[in-house]
Image (cartoon, rainbow, N blue to C red; front, top):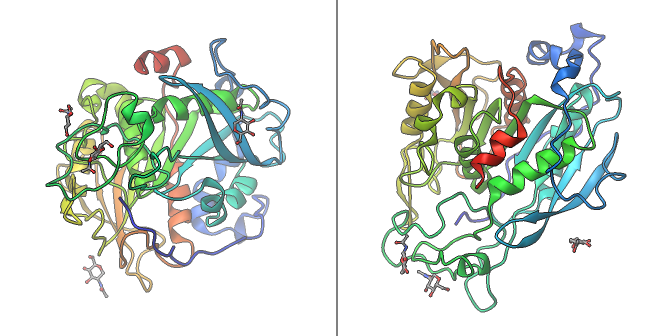
Length: 386
Ligand SMILES: *[C@@H]1O[C@H](CO)[C@@H](O)[C@H](O)[C@H]1NC(C)=O
Ligand SMILES: *[C@@H]1O[C@H](CO)[C@@H](O)[C@H](O)[C@H]1NC(C)=O
Ligand SMILES: *[C@@H]1O[C@H](CO)[C@@H](O)[C@H](O)[C@H]1NC(C)=O
Ligand SMILES: *[C@@H]1O[C@H](CO)[C@@H](O)[C@H](O)[C@H]1NC(C)=O
C-alpha cells in the first residue's frame, strides 16, 4: 500500500551521553534525565506462567545484545515470528523502559533499526529497543505487497474504493476467510504477537511495565494506532509517524477508546507527519485512488475527548521548531488526564523525515516522559486477546 521511497536524512551514531555532565546535554535530554535514574523495582515483575513459548530466547537476550530473536506464537496456528532487539549494557537489573518500533510495509526490522538512533539513545538512557518483523505470506502468483502488518482491517470491504486494489489475498487471510476487495496484508494477530514479545522479553530482562512505548512509520504507524486502541492501558505513550487509521478505525476496530476510556486515557500521543503526504494525507479521505483514511485531526479529536482536553488544537512550542522543514506543532491543551495529545508537521511527503534526527529526538523526548499510573497485568491484556 505504501510505496518504498527514500528515507529522510538522519544523524547516525551520536556519542553516548552521560548524565553526570548535565551542562553538555541538550535541554530535551535534561527533560527526560530521570529515565536514567529510576529505581522502582516493583515495576519489574516478570510475567505470568502462561507467558510465551520462548524456546531458545533466554541465554541470548542479555545486556549488550543486539540481533535477531525468533519466537513461536500460537496465533490461529503456530507461527514462527521474529524481532530485532537492542539491549543496552549497564542495566544492573534496574527496570528498563521498552520501546517498540514498527517498520513500514515492505521493510525489514534490522535495516529500520539501523536507520535510526534509538539504539544509541537506548544505551545512554537505559531503555531496550525492539523492532518486530512483519510477515509476507502473499501467495505465489498474486500481487505481493510485501511484509506488512494486519491492523485489524483485513476482510473489511469498506476501507478502499472501486476495484483499483489489485492484490492477492495473503495465505493467512485465505485460511481465516478474510479475503475481499481491500486485500493488502496478512491476517496474523499482531496484537498477540507484540504482546507475546513484551512478555517474552520481560521473562528474561527487567522491563518496567509502566513504561512500554510504541512508535512506527507508515504501515508501522497504522499498527501503532491499532495497538494502543486494542490493548488499552498497555502503552504509556505512542508516536505514529505518517501513519493513520483506515476509514472507521479512528477510535479502534471495536471502538475501544469509548469502551475502555479509563485505560485509554493513560496513553499520550504524538503524531509526526509530512505536510505533503499523499499516501496517507493529513486531511484523510481517499488516497492514491484506493484507500480511505481517517483525517489526522479527527483521530486526535477522539483522543483529546478521551483525555478531556480542549476541543481544538492550538500551536505549541518545541525545541525543534523551524529549520529547513519548518517543523511546527499543535496540541490539544489542558488535558485533565495529565497527558498530551500532540502532532508536528514538516515539509515533505510520505516516508520523508525532518532534518537532523529531529524525528528520533522528539519521539524519545515525548514518549519517555510518560508512565502508566496503573500498569497492566498479563491476565487482563490476555483477556482482550481472545
Ligand atoms: C524460526 O525461524 C528462524 C529463522 O528462520 C529459525 O532460525 C528457527 O529455527 C525457526 N524456529 C522454529 C521453531 O522453527
Ligand atoms: C483479493 O484476494 C482474492 C483471493 O486471492 C482475489 O480473488 C481477489 O481478486 C483479490 N481482490 C483484488 C481486488 O485484488
Ligand atoms: C468482502 O467481500 C468479499 C467478496 O469480495 C466477501 O466474500 C466477503 O464476505 C466480504 N467481507 C465482509 C466482511 O463483508
Ligand atoms: C511554517 O509553518 C507554519 C504553520 O503551518 C506557517 O504558519 C508558516 O507560514 C510556515 N513558515 C514558512 C516559512 O513556511
